Image (cartoon, rainbow, N blue to C red; front, side, top):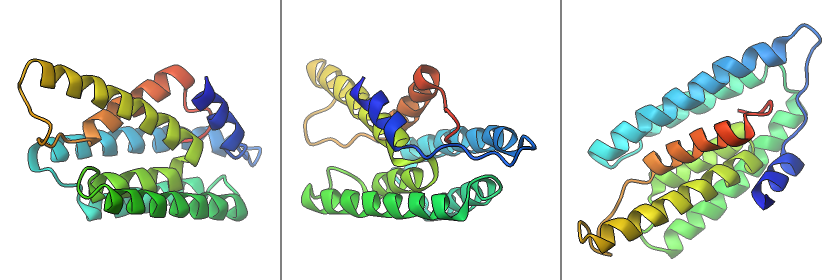
Length: 173
């Protein structure tokens, strides 16, 4: 409930030019979001990396689509808040020395820049909860030990899909 309230409070209002552009652009943005996360999940599971090229392409495509219906000032504010979030994540990754991957950090930062901080926080919260449950299970059945790494993007993807199913994308993806 707290995350839902935070999401609703922090997301900028959807601006429509009156010709349906905002609603029409949500679907390509949503498809881009889902496909990017599914692709990055597969790459993370197999190679344990998050390619910067994919993140950059995702960021640019999302910003181009958003610029068709979000004012420059709202888009700039979202970028600034997302960058601040990214720097906080980089600090956390540095502080926890390898427990949070830099690729995961960059993906969460780019998502905050394009989907909004409220959406991203809710998605990340769900991903952390899912990865915690998974970690407890694999530790209990002794498939992994505490030092083993697990790819985090698949949990972010599931968290994103849960976010979409529970809260919808409410005009922000």
